[in-house]
Length: 134
Image (tube, rainbow, N blue to C red):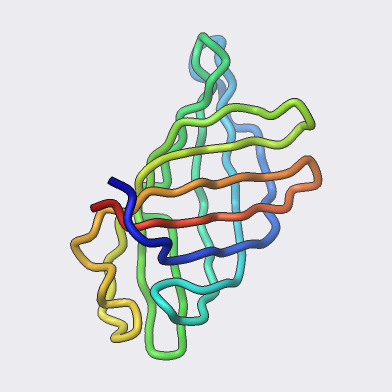
């Protein structure tokens, strides 16, 4: 069951083509943004990769290459998700993420499975909405 919404972060993304896996393309995406998470004002930076699958969908991973910064410390995160390109030239992903932190303002995220929507428009503007999964 989807719990309460615990965060929303938005900002620009940039993409880079990586060596293909067989005949299927692979992409590296860097995202930066600002917003709120667990009630704290945050800045976020992450690099994730996505691989196109034979059916045209995308599998994405951020293997502990995400950082959340707040006034009282930092958190790292790992995420995985499934996505697709949108008709307007953007992309959309849905998945799960896990945070690890010693920052007091973000400590409620430790040991919690979160689910997210990560949407990027055709101009490279992203929105990352995060919910606690109960």
